[in-house]
Image (cartoon, rainbow, N blue to C red):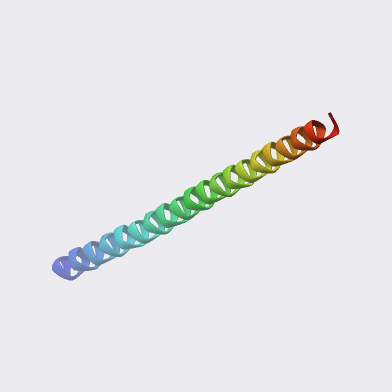
Length: 71
């Protein structure tokens, strides 16, 4: 029975290691997804900022042009 017990213990240890590997992999994937979502949010906000700056610059240019027409 010693050999059978050893095999059972080895199988349980292997199963535990596989379970830990699965949990670790799941956490790594979730971490990467969080990272990618945060990066996408930064890029979205940067694009919004560039658009807002372009709108501001266009408004300033329009107002300067209109001011010149008034002179």
